Image (cartoon, rainbow, N blue to C red):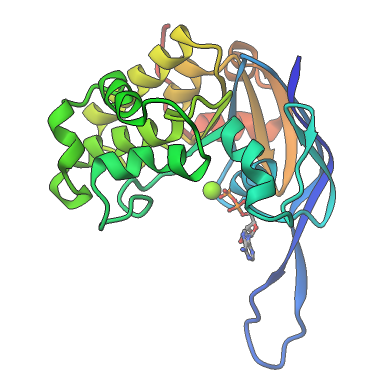
Length: 262
Ligand SMILES: Nc1ncnc2c1ncn2[C@@H]1O[C@H](COP(=O)(O)OP(=O)(O)O)[C@@H](O)[C@H]1O
Ligand SMILES: [Mg+2]
């Protein structure tokens, strides 16, 4: 079953003016794009900075409004202009982890409040506190962490919390926009293992933006390669990494170290 479907999805932005006399220029961040993601699969998104990866993800999640085209998630049309309440179904279906775990966590909230927030915001019934304890355990954090504030935690612990928050409401789709990029090497390996574990033990659909080929190699069945707002290549991870067809992909891969094996 197709869980994410984009058709002719496009996003233009007004580029910042370089002088007050310059005319506003429209810049295409995402050229008309079609994308299908099958439920339970894992898709990696790679491409140089500014190639439109985050724009694509924001549009798929209804966090930004497209210039043109349509998005359907779990068969329903995403309308980014709809009220927060009428987008509950989309928030329920998706979880999102950003690059910077510090910026994405509210410093005035405890771990427990941060992780539990989607349960309250989405009106999810059941024993919320038991669910929070369960998710804490799932991401490898002690129950005592529940009372801590973000500034009392390490970068790795904060990213575990961001991940717990992204899965607490049992979304069908988990999206990570460079979720490991701000972490140091050891912590990155731990969070990567955690994501791999999540994938093994659930039928989550995973969308991961990363410039780290190791991440894509370990987590993704398929990869799309983006350049200047276009998907220039798509294929199984093995095929794209070992036998890239597009010149740009070849250059991109040559510029990043590829972890051998696995
Ligand atoms: N809110 C915005 N306003 C204006 N331009 C933007 C905005 N967001 C992204 N862009 C532009 O769109 C292009 C794609 O950006 P982005 O999707 O963030 O790329 P990536 O995530 O691949 O680094 C870039 O040229 C960027 O400057
Ligand atoms: Mg980005």
